[in-house]
Amino acid sequence: MNALLFVYLTADNALQFHEQFGHWIAPSMPQSTPLPANDWGEMLLFALIGGAWLVSLLVALVRAELRPAAHALILAAGVAGAAVFGVVADAATSWGDKTDYWIAFAARLEDGGEFVMIIATFLACCAIFDIERRRGAAGEQD
Image (cartoon, one colour):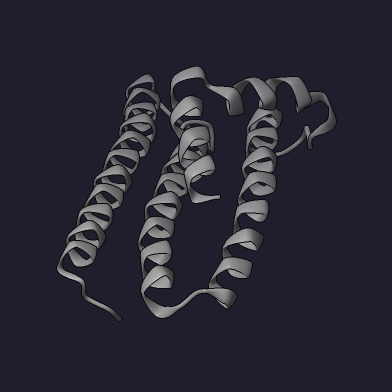
């Protein structure tokens, strides 16, 4: 599931699925709040995706041995970091009074933060793969 979520977050960062979903569902979202309706829609999509991911992660962790569970939690931290930028920094572009400078800064922080977390998670995944490959070649056991 981490791999599927990683692919989705990468594609979403490039193709802006959550922004499109937010605009599509905006008429059904709260209208009289400081946060625009489309932002509520974006958060709804992330909540649905994040909820499915969390359930699958918990199911996998219950059945996992310590080493794979630790690996999954390392990757989950990267996904959670991307979510913070994707949701919190995105909301900062819309919430309350703002200047054009603030909007530009928050938008760059959101996209840049998501991208950095995606890259960091990818690097962690490569490091885990390399460690496990070397462990296997050396014949080590848990």
